[in-house]
Amino acid sequence: MTARFWRLGFVWRLGMIVIGALLLVQVLALGAYHLQRERSPEAGFRAPLAGQVAALARLLDGLDPAGRALALAAFNGAGLMASIQPEPPPPARGARLPRLEATLARRLEADGRAVSARLLRPDRDDGEGAAGLPQLIGEEVRIEVELADRSVLVVEALGDLTVRVMGLPVGLVAGMLGLAVAAFAVFAVVRETRPLAALAARVERFGRMPEPVSLAEKGAPDVRVLIRAFNAMQGRILQLLRGRALVVGAIAHDLRTYLTRLRLRAEAIDDPAQRRAALSDLEDMEALLEDSLVFARATFAEGEAGTTDLGRVLARECEERAAMGEVVTATLPPAPAAVRGSPPALRRVVANLLDNAVKYGGRADAALAVAAGWVELTVDDAGPGIAEADRLRVFDPFARLDPSRNRELGGAGLGLTIAAHVVESLGGTIAVEASPAGGARLRVRLPAA
Image (cartoon, rainbow, N blue to C red; front, side):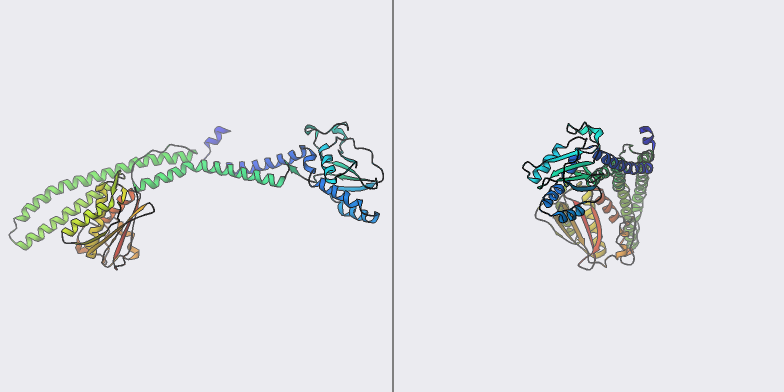
């Protein structure tokens, strides 16, 4: 049976777990029912039956015959039969219930009042000894209490009058058992779905940082097949990314050779205007090649380790641009803003955000803040802003927004794509918002180191 279960698929396993849990609840409920029949009636009749009989005896002591008849009529019902007899009836042949007798005597505070409690089934004992747990399977009890006028109150409790298990109602016990079974079923389901949870976490991580890590093949057969396919897929995807980087790198290397030759020939052009135009085109081509190569490398590079003060990186990048005459400001926190990541990767992020703001908005106003375990960098520009519908598309490779972004400003459209990839590989987020200055705001959040 166990070997067959391990060969079952994921859906069948969950079905078997649910069906097994329901069957277990039924078996436990049936066992509880039979257990209460096997237990001593004393455990079941001490309360409330002992209290009821004691109260009835006290009530009958102070009533006349008419009142007694009315009280007995009110007391009698399904499973309970009470009567008053002038003389004690012949003793029942079943086993005595001394604990129940002691409880009755205590409730009645009787001084010499005769109290008797016995089983009605004579085949369970010889009538002389006390009932033991192995012998007690019946629940029919006769209680005899001597009244004040020497008559005898006889109460016979028949059937499942008080269904008790360990002093608790079976309904409560069954509910507790049901909760325990439900907890076990939840544990079993979680155990079966744990490989899927690990797979989902790994897929999410691989989407941000393509680093192949093989998962252990656990769970149902179809889940193991899925994990095996994912492990193989990681390797194939990484090979494709590396192949793309190699191709782009080879192309960039060869094109740089031709661009160098073209630059030398452009320098020999006699017409100054034509020479400046040719050199400008060559510079744009070199920038496009460099951005493409950086993007190709970044798409499969793993998150970079180490700790870097993002405040120092931001201050340095702003100083360099201010020295070149660009309008760049920075608001820095008083304490270091340490984040996980290498300085080159973080400089690339900050530089791309600042360059983007200056290129499309004329200026860049950066602010850095540290709060609640995160380091937040915002870069505002004074440009036309980015429409809400385009705020996700701006991170796509080679995305060019028109007319809000001018086509004549150059660039390959990879700056924000590279910045987004680096930020996400470091466990952070990047988003576009509206700037209070009217332009666009780029917000980066990175975990504080």
